[in-house]
Length: 426
Image (cartoon, rainbow, N blue to C red; front, side):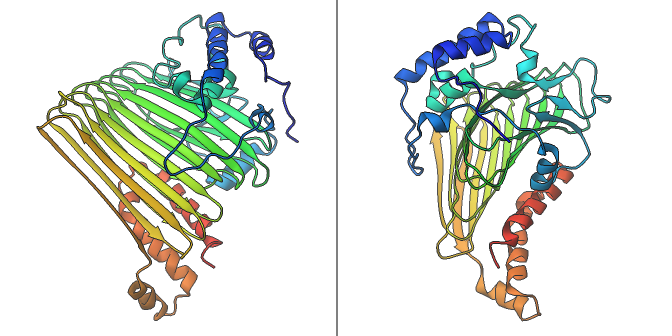
C-alpha cells in the first residue's frame, strides 16, 4: 500500500530530506530556490482548461509502491520484452549488457550523487522553475527521473525504455534529462501508468539537448487511471542538422495539460511530431505542441489525430513560431478529430507566427463524426456496429501510424487504442 512520505511541505523539511539523500549543494540550492519561488508564482491559467482547487494534501509528495509495477505497466502499456528497460522509481535496468560502456541510462536521482556539478548547467536551462507553480513544485520536490547521455558518434540500435509507475494518492514529481552528443542516435520510449483507482497528481519536467547531426526518436506514452491529473513540461533544443522525432500517445488520466516544445536553434535542424489522443469518459486532455524556428533552413512537421468518445474533452494547440532570420524554413501543422458521440467535444487551435518572408508554412484543422455511409457499408456486410466503429477509427489513425518510424511502437499504440475503445463504443 502506498503511504504518504515524511512531510516535505516546508523549507526546513525539504532541506533535511535533500541532505539525507546525499545530494550535492548545487542541487539542494536549486530545490530551495524553486521552493522560495512558489510564494511569488500563481497557478497557471489556460484558455481551454480549468484548473480545480488544489490543497496541500493533494500536492504532498507520496512514497511510491512499486509492488506490481512491472505487471501493471505491461498490462496498461503493452510493454514488450524488447529493449533495455529502466523502471522508475527504483532505477532497475532489466538488461544493460548491450549498452555501450560510455552510455549513461539511469535514475537521475542516483546520477547526480557523486557527479560534482556536472549536470548543474543543464537542469532548468530549458524549463525554469519560475515557469509556473507546477514547474516550481517539480523542481523543488522531484523524486525520480531518467538520465540518458549518449556520447559522440554512438548509435544505439535497440530502443531504450523508461517507465514510471505512479502511486495511489498524493503527488509525484519527476525530472528527465536527455543529452545526445554530435552524431549520436537513439530511440527512447518513456511511459507512465498507475493504479486504475485513486487520486494522484503528476507534475513533471523533461529537458533535452540534441547536438549537431544527432538523431533522437522520442516516444512518450501514458495510460494512467481516471483520477490521475497530469501537468507536464517537455522541451528539447536541436543543434545544426540534428533531428528529433516525437511520438506522443495519450490514453489515460483525468485532467491533463502538457506542453511539448522544440527549439530548432541552428541551421538544418528539424523536428517532426506525431500525436495520437484517445479521450473518453470524464477526461479532459489539453496538448500543446510548439516548434520554434530560430535559424535558417530548419524544418518542422506536426500532425495530431484525436479520437473523442462519450463525454471526453480534447484540446490541441499546435504553434509554429518562425523568427526573423529563419530563412528557408519549411513548416507544416495538421490536426484532425473524430467524434464518436454527441457529448464529445474537441477544440483545435493551430497557430502560425511568422516574422520572416522566405518561408513555406501551412496549418489545417478538421473535425467530424463517423461517416454514416462507411458505417452502413460495414454493417451491411454483417459487421456489428461496435466493431465497425473500431475499424473506422483504425482507418482514421492509419495514415499517422504509418509515419511512425518504430514498428513496435505502432503496434503498441494500436493495441492501446483498441483497448481504450473496446469499452466505450459498446
